[in-house]
Every structure is written in C-alpha cells, then in structure tokens.
Length: 328
Image (cartoon, rainbow, N blue to C red; front, side, top):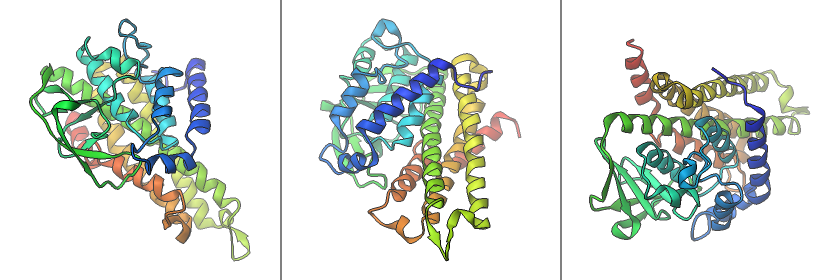
C-alpha cells in the first residue's frame, strides 16, 4: 500500500492547481455559475485538450491516458478545492462506468472532451443533466445510455449553484451493462472519486479559515490566538489528515486491490462526506456573520459540501454498508 504521492502525481497536482488558479479562481467561479451554461465551456475544453483530464482514466486505445484512480483522485482533489463549476465530476462518473464496462463506442468522445456526460441513479435528480450530451441511468440492476436528444429535461433549483441538476424523462436507451459485479465496482469507484473532491473542499476551506484567523482582530486580538478557535482549527486539521489517508487508501484499492475496494469506498463516503460538511460548516461559522452573506465565499464551500454529502446517498447509508461488509 502506498499513501504518499509519487513525484509524477505531485507534478500532476501542481499542474492542475496552477491551471485552475489562473483559469477558474473563485471570482470566475461566481461569474460562471451565474452564466446561462452554469460553467465555462472554454475552461472545460482546456481541461480536456491541454491537460487531457476527461480522458485521464480512459484506456489509451480509446484516446485516453490510461492512468489510475490514484491519479484521478489527485485531480479531483484540486477541482474540489477550486469549486470548479460544471460537469467535470459528472463526466468523470460516466468515464468510470464506461471504462469498467468496456464501452468502445462512447469512450473516445469522453476522452477527447467532445462528449459531456453524466451518471444518475435517480432520473429526478441528474447532476448536470441539462448540459450533458449523454445520460447514463443506473436503475439498480442495469446501466443504460441515453443520448440527450432522446430525453425530456427540466432544470431544478439547487442548493449548490456550481453544479446544476435536472429532472429527466428518458426512454430505455442502450444497455451498457447489467453485470452485478461490474455495477458494484462502478459505484464504489464513483464513491472514491467523490471523496477525493470532498477532500479538496476540506483542504481549501481549512486553508481559508486559517488565513482569516491570522488577520481578523476581535477585542484587540487576532481570533487565531483564542483557545476556542485554536481547538476548532486543530479539530478541522485532524479531519483533513484522516480524510486524506482514507482517500489515498481507497484510490489505491481501486487500482491495486479489488478485494479491499468495497470496504474502502464505503469508509470513504461514511467518513469523508460528513467530515467535508463539518469542516465547511465550521469554516463558515468562524467567519462570523459575514460568512453567511452572498458576497463571501464561505457559503460556496458550505453548499458544495452539503450537496456532495448526499450526492451518492447520505453518510448513514454508507455507514450501514460498511458495518455489513465488516460483519458488525
């Protein structure tokens, strides 16, 4: 088991972080989420073209990079920290599914960024359903692919404005897979991918509140000097450390140890999802009243964390599954 990033993975992280800092800072995130599309098509195209991120885990024979889930986790941590708007995570979920199912027809479009896709277990809440050109619907027993032109879509009002949702009415579509083991692996790998994004949110929120605690003065003292604030920041840091270890382990299992993946994925969502929400909540609260205002970015982290916490089911569902896997 290897929980420390290799030099190549560190270089990947640095490249993605630098790109997002320049192309999608939080001021741009706000502009993009309020645009008609809800995201920047230009940034998404550059993620696909310049960095090749939509095809990161797609096999090379289909135009992808053939990288592993450890590398994917590195990327998603950075997109999560940047609160990147748009369908990158949704398309990543689709890429995971199509790669595991070995779908030769759709993978090249995913890899080159020409096909924006999404994956949903509930047609009533489809992430980025309005933007996707392909919708993968998982009814619990089989996975089917439906082109966007064949579905009726209705935009939904969402808590997280950086990731829109839609209600879709779709015909059966084309069968991608109905193999139970394949479907189980797909769902586990998606849980790991989401946890990686949540890890990024934790890190960014903690870094932001630590910086604020060093400059905000209350009653003649920097708030970071108060014992209660120190304790809260230490607690948040502990959650970051635990979440990072869990995500690294789960991503490793996705690449190297299929037998460990179910427990690792359940643990990732049982712990990291809740930790992400708690850190984002405390990040907002430690800012005081200003954190609740529309002008401050704290609420953006809070809303992303809350939306992510339930995207693949609430933490209690994953805790229950983990307990069953451990025979507790």
